[in-house]
Length: 190
Image (cartoon, rainbow, N blue to C red; front, side, top):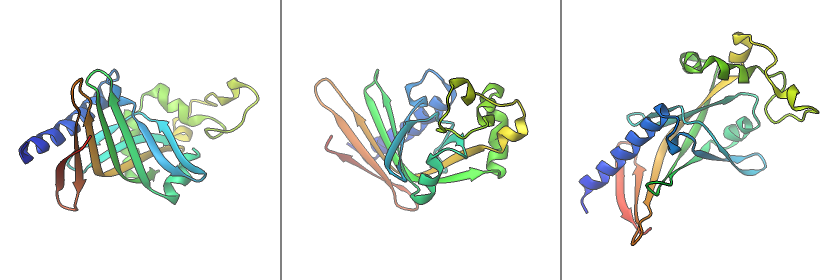
């Protein structure tokens, strides 16, 4: 199998990631994101908000008050997991996260957040806070400025992609590693 096939495969991964950003029904739209939290490993489902092959970047959005933020700052290494049960394709993407808050990137991203979702950032208490009644966890107001104050973007620069396709008779696996100027590609044992 040629290097051309591997590069085509890598291009297909990035195309599929970009498609998932636009298609709420795509299973890759809701990947798992793993981080090294303050108390050990932590994994959560996130909404994939952007995928840029040129910059090798995946993004998600979060509340700056979230308990995951100190974990990202302590150890910026992240692992994304995408799986499509129909095609039986799994992609793991690893890299480093940078948290953007109240900067040009968040100002550009904020208008694309649906108004109903913007309210999620205006809760009186931070995500994960203990409450006595579920109603206390709802948005406190509809002030966009206070909501934006809590809005953050998780910007992940990807340096490794592991692609696995499960088949009825055999499986195929490929790995892609960024060397600082290009993707190195190799077929690997599944």
